[in-house]
Image 1 (tube, one colour):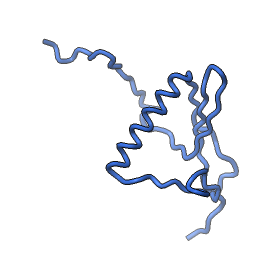
Image 2 (cartoon, one colour):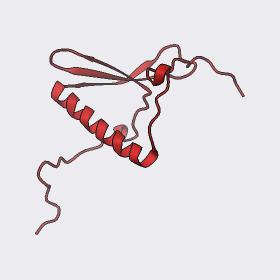
Image 3 (tube, one colour):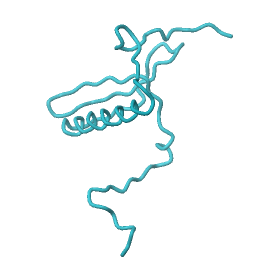
Image 4 (cartoon, one colour):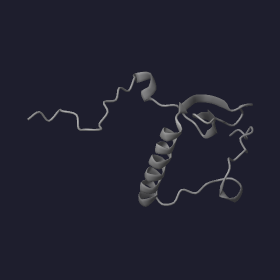
Length: 105
């Protein structure tokens, strides 16, 4: 029997080299219409006058809900191993906006 056969519901994934290194994002803005969700991933860094959109992902509402479920599951697994993730900002939510210029060493 061939062990290399794909299992049912298993997808073969091609990860191009230029994508494999990833893109840093510390902010996401999510908007939606009746037919799709748009997720803009941004990076906001000290000394930068504006946050820059690094990637935009567009997905159907069904796939957005699947992503939400997968994120919840993975966050729960992460917190079981590493402890609770504590959010920053006012009342533990929001985005810390203190990204202005910082002192130099």
